[in-house]
Length: 299
Length: 299
Image (tube, rainbow over all chains, first blue to last red):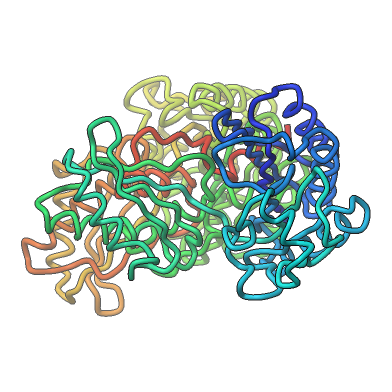
């Protein structure tokens, strides 16, 4: 089986096209790495790149991207709505096929060490790669953003980086880590009453007592109430369970689910899990999927 | 996108392992062809091989298999429970990726012409490749089996083959055609009453007024009532619609679905269709599936 890792680096540039292009060029310069998607947002002044490939190639590509961004982006001049602390703000590795989460954690640590040593950029390991519990959450790592961390990194030993100097240059600091694939999942309700979407979001999300790997908000989108979610580990909290919980909560208000959507790239396994659940397919093996057999051709 | 055709030739030998091995060896001797599965049944005295690859390679492999089987199998000595008319009894081509049904029909006709010309084996085109309506159904083409057809092919002009001589040798005749992927789908009920499974099978199957691309039987399997089905075109009659129809019919008898199973290889699309239906995923594109992007690597 081919070993595939996904990497989704976020860069603090969403306006100057020539800068974004040069960073993407650096990422794609490694043979075997495929850039699947580049999303730039001018308000956020940030670009999110999705790339995949074999672990060694993706790790090298991430390094080249960080190096290039450090040369092209000056955080003293950066403004944007999205919280950020570095030219390369965050680099998560995501296991897709033939690699474990432990492999991705190791990639993150090795890359972090190299970035600190060769580029003198402070690196914080986060999520599954975190070295202490209070660094699991990216928002905690990034507290104070570039401007605040620039001061605290030198004065507060609690904020010393995992790798690199306890001192920030114009490239700022970078969070590197590993996480499961994330699914952006939105459910539309048969009502224009956003209060119902908000109540359902509270019911299903982890932070207010709901399912562990669910983040949720209630929104009004084009006149329709929407439960907008990030499913942060679909293997632990599957999409179908979230769907059915929303269906039941909505029914309590006399409301139905009109449709749903998944934004961006989705691991096939999340769809197969839903098919298995609803079709009650016991004793099913992913080996039975014709395309998964074909994928082995590359070996 | 890679072009992939599946081919599922059936050979009239299910007992002599050395003969089966030699036929499979002939199929696999074409570069780029992958034999995914070989199912031999001694009672049927028949082997079903599943192979995949690019169209040209699979067509060549099918020819080599037919040639080898003609040399090794003597239909005058063949006995088995399964209806059959030739050493290579039937050769369906199945479009999987990047090829159309029309492409597979063309493959079947080209292969049929070559088999008739080079091997002097009578060939009947069937299913989507059939040249007349009464040859669509394989059972009609095979009527009388080897022994009966051997006589009628010379005396009844209605039974003249599409290619090759109107005369059968010891290799018999071969049906060659194209069809959609077939899904063997069984649903287990919360009852030991086989009459309920039989009633549900009658309700869902095409032959007695049900869904067009469904063949169904009611069976008792290890004390449990089972609706045993072949779904002959899941793109037209999707698995989830069959599932929900069975669920409703079963409820009428106070019975529930306990589980289901798919036997053998399944096209990923059949599972994705079910996920889309139950999750109510509108505006979903197969391009969003991460693995489908990765598959493009090979280009």
